[in-house]
Length: 243
Image (cartoon, rainbow, N blue to C red; front, side, top):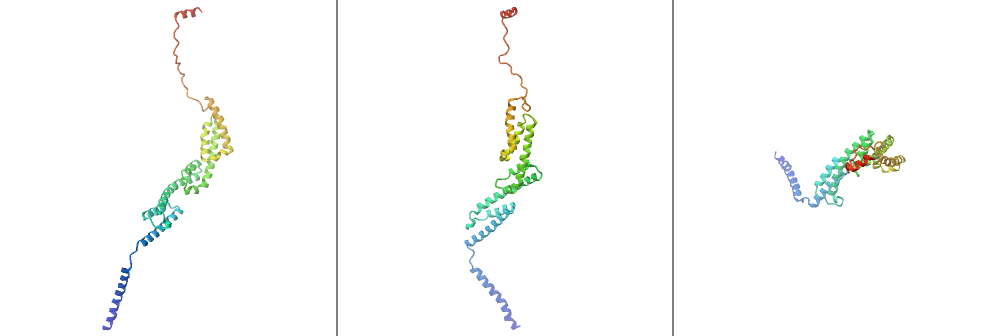
């Protein structure tokens, strides 16, 4: 058994020595300084910013908001490419919140377009933010719905003019709607023809209050401010009797 003792002692001492060397290296190694901490925070910020941009590209607005909030919780990182990162993250957060609302409006627009309801489609599209990505996505469908909107309201305006001499009163709102949605429609020959008919008809109707559509409620005749005539004197009555 004595010849096994050196081996046993060696197996015990070697791990202790190796552990002591590792401990000495760990003690001698200085802790990470401020520069190293900045580099770690910068790397984390870059990773989050890349994830945020990817979420924007995928139109994943909840994920975009989450990444923006995580960035805002970090200290302002150093680095030329990370300059003003908190302000950019704040803008990205606000944009993601707005686009999340725009997505609901865009869904309504698509539903109205699928149902061939141009009035509802045009109204929904007009509610989208001016800088929304969904305006570009729905531009082609919107142009089709706008053409249908102009066509429908033009037909209604023409029908109103044919209905009665004073139909301009019913036609004018349709013309106003057309020009509000598509100002370029003012050069359309059909729209110009209706516009040309509305002016003279309305002025003529206003000149004749009794025309259909322009009737006024009956009014009681105003009483004379002078009151009843005073009675004639006796001499005047006698002269009138002689006549």
